[in-house]
Length: 170
Length: 130
Image 1: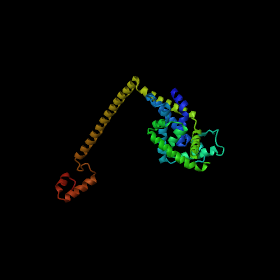
Image 2: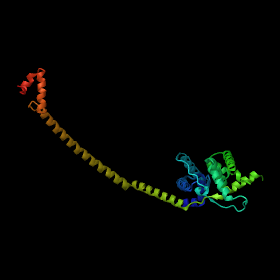
Image 3: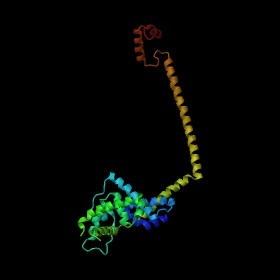
Image 4: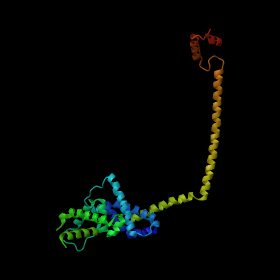
């Protein structure tokens, strides 16, 4: 059980960030991370380390999130709330060298709403690539799809995000 | 760097500026669930111990013996009731009072009917009809 604490210490933040970004609900995200920890504990004896522990942990979280989103289709979606950050349980760290002409907080909130509108497979790749800084190869391994699929999903997702934020560009 | 690239870079930077911190309570809850599960596993291990198995086997023998006794006593009482019922029925049917175990009024009515149908000898022999 001590090993579980170490996993949580090292990967708790990325696991929570992925779950919160995918589910857009902090309570559900915490539940998913909790379930993921139990699965990691159960599967740890069979873990041979061929994949990195980080990728493996995130893969478990991604699978649990997909299950939840699939179930949500039948139970109804979450109500819209004005603060996309608050609902998702995300924190925004102000960017130091930011163009002063644009309100970064406002733009970041608009970006979160745009992420809300993405289909789960596109939302997943955006979060893994740009929020958790995974490489295309790591993402392909984590999601069990070819790298080409990852690149095309990312390109489609960025097109949608660009469209949503077009009016804010200077 | 053109305008689109600059815009994409902004998006990327904004995306990486947002994150969530892990909630320590999540680890505590996971540990509690694991501990609860291990408690349940401990009880299963206890059930597998030889003493527990011997106790279970003993209880099985005792319950089988008790069941057998109950079944036997139940069978004998059923047989007694059946025998008593048969005896009284036969006695009633063979009782030579002309009623064949039926109430007197019903018996006389049936005799009257049979007399009308031309079987008066039977009725006479029983002394029911004049």
